[in-house]
Length: 511
Image (cartoon, rainbow, N blue to C red; front, side, top):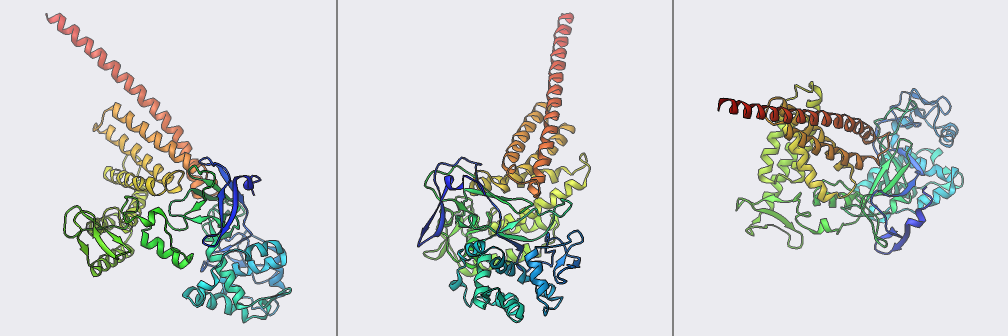
């Protein structure tokens, strides 16, 4: 943990927010606020069976406890966990394979044996226990965690701790509400693992939600979490984190928060029907050409900002369902995606969250297409379309996710790559002259530098960390290419001057 955390932040408590973090002093953009190790790491809910050592794909069983799944490279897992399974003599050897969802809750229980302070720290975390009681998620956990564990005598007692259904439900609630995704776990050879893991970070989880975050979280391959400020934070201001997705519409964000975090967000974005002017939730008006209809929850009605026309609720439900069905069933093919985007841009709007979802899929397909071609043979139309999509996404992200942003950094990298390749191709066929090529390359350089500035906070063990390394190499290559183009421009200028003088001299000779 960062030694100066207490100097930077203060933990406060209120009836409305519970415990939360407040800045003790001004915090600069990009400043490290906290470095925290998890007190528990485990597989995500409903994850595939994975190694208890590294959470990679499992291929065998632990030779000590004879019950824990391991991978080929890991010879052991946590000693306390292994010892528990070894002593559980009546537990079927396939129990963990059949009930893998119990792994992380059991690791929480085993803190009672291995580290009582961490156990108490965990149990002090918010679980929304009463709000969850008898809900759908309560019954799911009861079926896949509580009943399997309590039906086995070995799980009913951890030392002097009696394990009950309510205790397990509280732990499941703590995990659902407070864990963060761990991306970038490495195997024993230092290779990136594509697994679903989550970690419980007590101090980081104290951050209040806001759909416009002022912090950035980066987790490395050893599960250490680092919390940075994404924008400047003034002394006395709360530290925020967006516990939903940036490109979710207000309805999607509110649904996610209500079901998973048990509160309704009233931030500036959620309170603005236009979503800060991005219109991720707005629908095209059916009564005028350019109008957009926004939802007013106090009415509640969909009303056009231009002509005041109100959309019938049945119509809204119909076009939203059609869009979701089309996007979810659309094959990952650029032609099909373009059809879906064109169709629903006319009924929703080009920046609606569902349309943006399709555009993100299209951008990914175009990226894959570009990578499959030789650099000189990539279809120009694919590069042009990819560039347009990146420009559109950047326009929205700079509003909704200002400051240091992982999504903005990735979009800037993709924008730079498309601009360089397209500009090079256009120059090769004579569509643009060398001065314009140089101008576009410098624009690409600025975008790539900004991308690196945002992605540099990502650890090298994560996909974004690997992208940062690649971007740095490409920045060096781009600068070398810019120097060559500058030399080319100077040569062309000299040639023009020479030809101009020759023409003048030739004119004098004729006279």
